[in-house]
Length: 388
Image 1 (cartoon, rainbow, N blue to C red):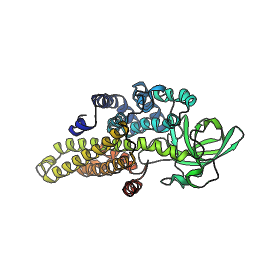
Image 2: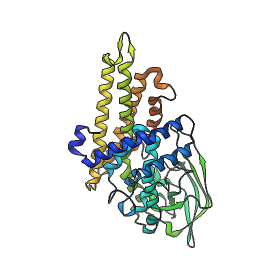
Image 3: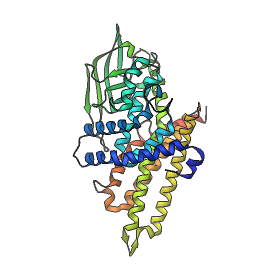
Image 4: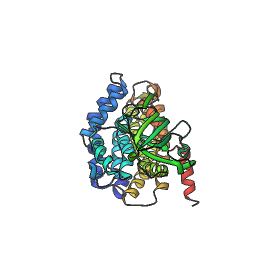
């Protein structure tokens, strides 16, 4: 993976080598799991556990964890995470999902500097022997996280947790949740805290949901679930700040996943149009086909530049990441949607045939414009940054 602009501005040799090695692992070890799952021979839960096991064995999950607790780098290297997501999503959006959730769910422990919890759990996350989940979304609190209503009330040395989280990826397979809950009487963000909740605590149960790109996802229901007050990750009232700091690290990587899906769609389209003959010549020789490919390729390269620029800013210590991250997430996910949609159009009937690569890409790309901040929210964030 050596696009010229990235080589000149954002990537070091370590990132190119990493991307190439992960691409090989994804092709050789993740694609077979993908195929078994897509064919119905393996369940969602079994596939998720298999992906995590393979990614852990290959050392890829180490990218999501700081070096002190079994990770690859002293601090999270966002360019490495983005390179990994692009390479993984090229083969399987499901595999990419399993990868990034290990970071998204576990990183709040590191950000909170909870050393005992970090020592107990993060090495296991890095090796793939524990699965994490990030539980912030609620039926009435998606884009508006400050409206979260799940409650955590002190009762002596415990928090007693009640309420419902929804659209929680890894629900049902996770070993723990990093939970955004209301610990104070204040309304809005001031009453919110982040708490570590083991999945096997009494009073925690899961109702599964089905989405168009299947993976373990569902409602996590808390019914008088009790956890020690020592499991508080943020300061009381500082939960939303911790959640948003975590999202700021990983949001740009959603754009990288989008680039991987888009790059696969572009490659599939180029290969298909070389062999598909219409009106006496291959589609690749038709002017409208070439125009479509040119637009897809340009969209992709622009998306990658924005994504890896934001990642490089993070890795070089910039304190002002929000605008760059939001631009990267917004443009890359919207561009990927256009690219994949065009790929379906170029494939004609095959593009909507269940089991084809582009049909799977079409299902996988859609959610990226929603999770970790919708496109509409990114626009508001970007605009706000110009008025502050």
